Image (cartoon, rainbow, N blue to C red):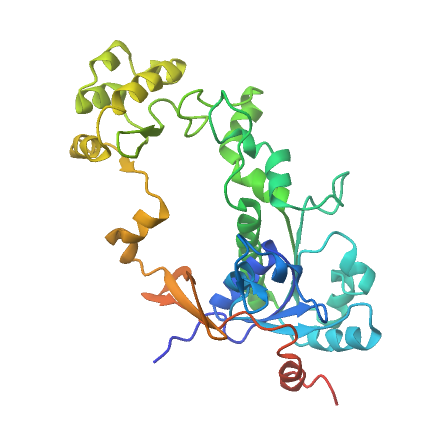
Length: 382
């Protein structure tokens, strides 16, 4: 017997493209909501053509399928009066409307929050923007690399002797989408208690600022920019040995640990010249000693010594090695989506409910695939 998902019965209209908004819609769909993706007639979401490494499934990008699985597609031209009227009828019958357009776009179409709450006062209206709806950057493009750059995040990764280094994933989009879901769920709980709707607003910039709360709190107090290690940086606020170290056959991750305990565990006598209070003040010197020392043996040699002493150390795996490891296999993180005659292997929702993993194998819809079904289901045409 299949588990009844917690958001079953809720309907979400997703006016979103690319990654941040669709990733929020994906999580709501994983949890059981009926997510209807509102797309432009013909072309649909611009993310359909955003191919990573030129990987395609049917005429859509592989990336599009991974973040738009388990959704329906309804096409509507927001500049067409008939389509707009149809959308307003639909909005009157759903629980959540979400979009990630620039400030003012939905308002121009007559679908801003002040407009639609007149149609559906209990509606949860959720918005992602790049920089908020006010200020000099409000109309700048909300693109992940640009946001990482202007929020200082690129100065937290890599060594201090290097220039800024961005994350290798779209961290702003993913964080912002997850936080939008948190806001939506909170508003739905309040609606259940008080029978009122809500406007939920978040921006990529605010998500990345919140992501850096440790560093920014330190900066607010000291007015000094946190300094990355010049050698093997792992976290600008943490002392030696925190970082990644090359061995003869790979890499080793060392987390927080006492310098004397580390010296004893691996037999590095040179570290005995330092006290624990030197771990930050002389961070680069200590790390360079470790760089030279750890480079002489294989990863397994060091892991055996460190883990036997209960010290926090792990090998650094690439995806090929990670997928071979039992610790990965036991999680059963993979799922298969059948898109046409092709199989797409992707990750599942990471949440378990009452011990059950959540899987959804429905592929991303074709543009406008569900128009007639949605019109019928919601009785949009007399």
